[in-house]
Amino acid sequence: MGGAVYVYPSEQVPDQRELTLVLTTARMESEQILEQLYYGRAYPNGLVIVDPQDMASVVDDPDLLWIARRIKAAEDLRYDLVGDREAQQRVADFLDGVSGQRRGLEDRLRDRYGAWRAPIYDPERGDLTFTRVQVTLDRTAIYRAVEQRYDAAQFRRNVMQAVESRATPPTVDDVRAEFLRQRSFAKPVWQGRPSDEPIDQAIRSLVTQARLEVIRGGDERYVCGRDPGLLQRHWTVAVPPEPHKPRFQLEEAVRMVVRDRPQGTTVREVRQHLQQAAAQFPDEVVDAGRVDAHLTDLLSRRELETVQTGAALQGPLPDDLVVRPSRPTAGEQPQVPKGPESIRFGPAIAPQIRTDVVSRIDKTDRLSQVTVSYRATLRGDDLKAYADLVGLGERDPGDADLSISWTLRDVPVTDRDGLLELLNRLPHPHICEVTVHLQREEVA
Image (cartoon, rainbow, N blue to C red; front, side):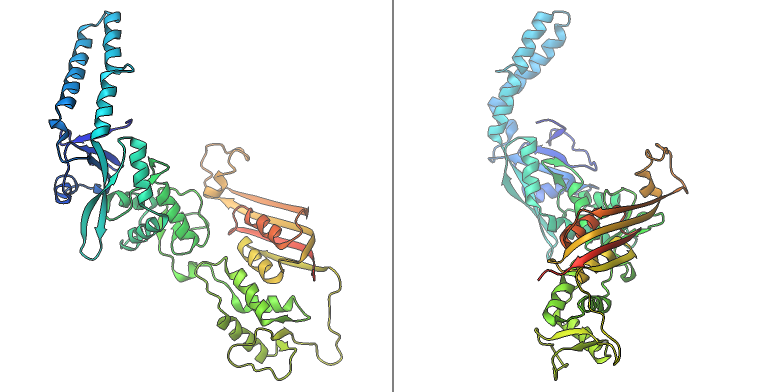
């Protein structure tokens, strides 16, 4: 089967912090598994138990015993034949040849096994029982059956439990270990092999959703609301306080959407723009009521006005109500852009630029003369990624910092989606300063 496999009760099964494959010589009831294999272990969820297909004990099978005795006798004989290479080769062929005894034993064992004893946890009663999932006696096949048992949602739930159950926030390494301690947790398998990858993916997903944060030290102490990238075992995982969560400034976004459309835009279009912009902020819900409340407030303060006369400004606003920036006072001429309009975004961090782009530019607008300027100062782990480039090599950067500044002119993007894709690729999005200049032309 490859890798360490333990036969119970013939062998002592070690209590180790990794998934451990265990073959039982006879079927075991749930209570027996708990009493004989689970209780008293630090890592009971690390056990992957496979038992025979029928009720008879494997060690009572006369055919298996006969093959096993022949293998044992041949192995003993081989030691007695030291120096006789021809005789040793005949013994090796007898054991490991095409029709060898070991292959015969493996084939016979495959006929007798098996089923993976998959744990089922009842949260109401706190009980753990074991069902039988049919598997072939093959290491990869067994682990693939384990992998298919658990989905990404369960790993996310278990990660949240591992973090929220602790008085002190755990490290990434603590969370990984908890999956082998807790009997109710998913067993971590990735692509048919034991791996921490599904745990790490769950942590990264929850951090991106701003349900968790990772604290890694350095200038940027915490990461919340974006993918933290490759996790380090010593980073701390915690539930983020409200100030650490990214926030969507709805009122300012309403102003920007309407301001960039001086001829007027419908309430329906304002809602759609803001819902698209807010999609980048986890757990942020921008419903029609919130948008209408801000529009009503801006209308009452005369920052905005309606095209229609006598429009009711109480309760939900009509979808086709047209709003626009308030017109200049008497004697002033309104500035109406003709042809391509020059727009500047920033300087700001990349996520804010993305939000502003979605708020101010339509998907159908045509863009040209796009220029992107980027500045960032890197320290600590961020600087390590450029260690070879600046000659640091394997040395710890210590208090050193690296200033990066560049300008990309005539960027080959012509629409909003292309610009957003470029912004998504910028490195260090939360510690950089980005400025974008472009020409926008509305397309009817």
